[in-house]
Image (cartoon, rainbow, N blue to C red; front, side):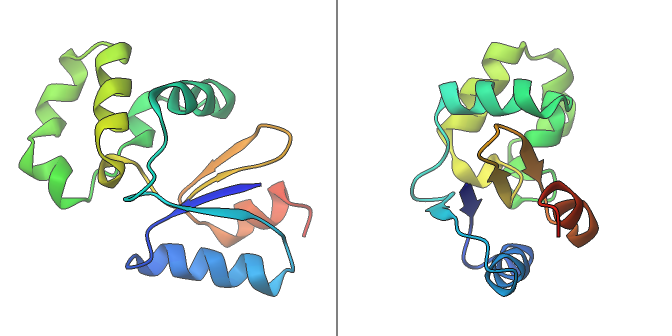
Length: 118
């Protein structure tokens, strides 16, 4: 299992504490220092079944500074993947990639518990 998080994010810390309390093993990657690659993002997006916009951290400072709320609808998927891969702070977090390939975005304890059979 691969856990992308940002240590200064309170939601990421809650998710990590939950994983630890459930004794769920995972490999941790700092989304800012070792952000997902373009290929990883494409794979995760397709596996998630979610709209690509859901992969953006819409409450982040960089998202707002770049004015992405107005720009995203006019961008192609390829342009959006490239943008997401350019800076991990644009990516919604936490992001959990399960061993079976399923992807969980953001932390909702009930959804994670269900997905992980807890």
